[in-house]
Image 1 (cartoon, rainbow, N blue to C red):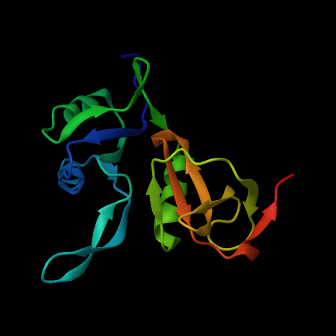
Image 2 (cartoon, helix red, strand yellow):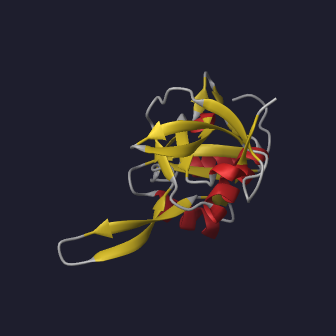
Length: 169
């Protein structure tokens, strides 16, 4: 590992271990961020809204020292850190802030791994997502606003009023 820099990083966890890892990292005083959304789960006898991870098997951690990196890596729930080549990927604070904004203010949020074809590029001009660039796509028979977060190769789809949008450039 090259010289360690304090930053946000992404951990890939064992399936369904995100919440457990987040709480145990908090106990170890390591800053973590697990974006969640409310989703309706159906069982045979009932339905219930539960908090589900926005990005299943991923959790963001802010590491200050290389020691914290190795502490995380030694945890049973951690499979590996996301890397680009041989270096672990750093996540800019702006992306963490954007995800926090989307989770706090978004309604009907979906995350998909599909390679969606590019649509019309627009800028969001009103509401909590002001300044985000986005694309309009046709998804599941409805026009949806598409905000892409490339880091995790996932697309975040949001319902926004059409009057919140303006042409770019």
